[in-house]
Image (cartoon, rainbow, N blue to C red; front, side):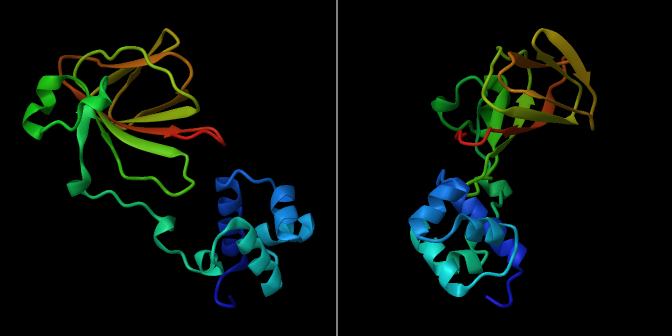
Length: 197
């Protein structure tokens, strides 16, 4: 425990607590410690090993989970992980690369799911106008290739390569290429606290 920065330890504890939907008071009560102990630990203050042990027991995790970064600190997407789907019908299964452009707009869900993460990154290839959609949270769109028109609440936004747009996801929105050439977008969907992707 001496080798780990207390701020990192506190941040890991906070992620675990929030991931389980617990308030500071809930965790303190379940661990039979004072709420101030949880606040101090999460803010990076030193704590007694017995306090950390009690908090981990209340969370149902081993202390090692907080002391080592483990696999849940990063999510890596390799090219071999690519699985393109139709933008308007994820459920129809993966598209072969040879049929991707024949199926219209396509989306590739990038591997990104940290255990308690709220970000859903995708690559979206826009060939034709998409239907309107909406979802909870925020969306950030960055144009990687081509020129895109993104319509949010009826207002058109023309974005060149290297430009971006952020908007509330519950506003009706759609995408289309500005010309007959397809465009490629990086979309980051950020869901609000407590909702799942």
